[in-house]
Length: 115
Image (tube, rainbow, N blue to C red):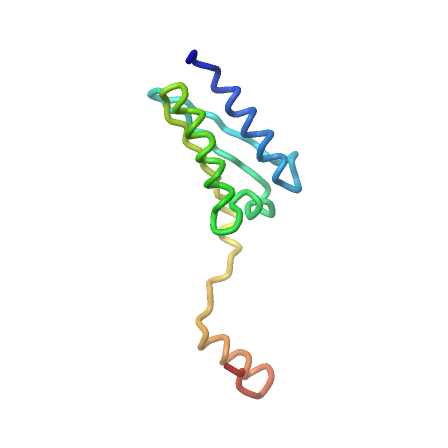
């Protein structure tokens, strides 16, 4: 099969991801090619990340499988990554243990939390 332009892959991914998000204007695809491999990085609004990841990663896994197959037709590797927003990561609260939550509930209500 004849090689095709990597830009076609990035445009296809762009349209696919835009269809899955609530803020399609914020979607960006960064394509880099090295050693015959194509890396496509998806940037989306932090609120849309869950739509791209899907339940238990099923959506991003399906996207990766599709583009791996497209790449195999041209004997090359296509890697699809979802970039992580550093600001999004820093705003997350550390997860509390159950014991801490029970103590906080007890302090708020004056009675222990039911198990």
